[in-house]
Length: 330
Image (cartoon, rainbow, N blue to C red):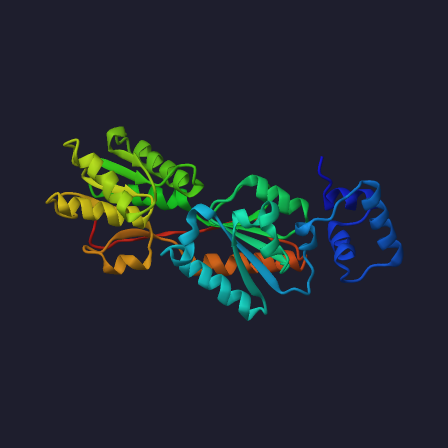
């Protein structure tokens, strides 16, 4: 069994942050406290590792921004790029620097390049494995999840995916669209899963039949959106409307629909989700669900810095409202 700082703190009768200060030789603590911590660590055979040396100290002024390795182009991703820019800008205004790494960079020996530089806290962007969160929590690192949530008592910031999706589909139904398809990224991604739930709930509440032959799942890319839409049209079925769980898929779907000689929205209406900047280049202009990406990034920094300063956190669940932006595609 691996002994953690949490175990040492409990054995010494002090807080995890106190253990962190003793191990990193920073901050204020008494000689008696130092002795208790070191004796507890020795008694438990605690082995200080590279992650432990990266425990928070208020001297580093560094924030770790961890991205999911499978989404490594995240820095140029049209949804995440403005969020990251907001995180960097907001952090710099508060005197902090950002160290960017992937989730794999904080596992095993790969932790060294990031954690040798030391961080005061971490923002996890997009999907993250719960084991990594548990590891960081055991080390006492302040954490905030961005655009995802886990049942691990960790603060998070995300959009109201369920309500945004519900309102988008309800809008289509109120415009007398009944044959509504759904294109999405993988449901392992909680955001897409919540948008799928919103889609299903709207159909159910308005007594619209669910047409499973008009539902497709794949990757959240433009090319995949085209492939998914092609696979529906190739069956001879033409939906009256498509709700896509993200704009990238919606843009790909528009390409497929136009290539099939169909008109948007006269033949098929299309609605996306996220309102990325790429939408300005699409014809017809894409109706989509707006997510306040700048607010999302700024709020993540605000919450993390409050946790670093050990201020009381008002609420751990921070769900930002969405807004349907109606344009030419619907």
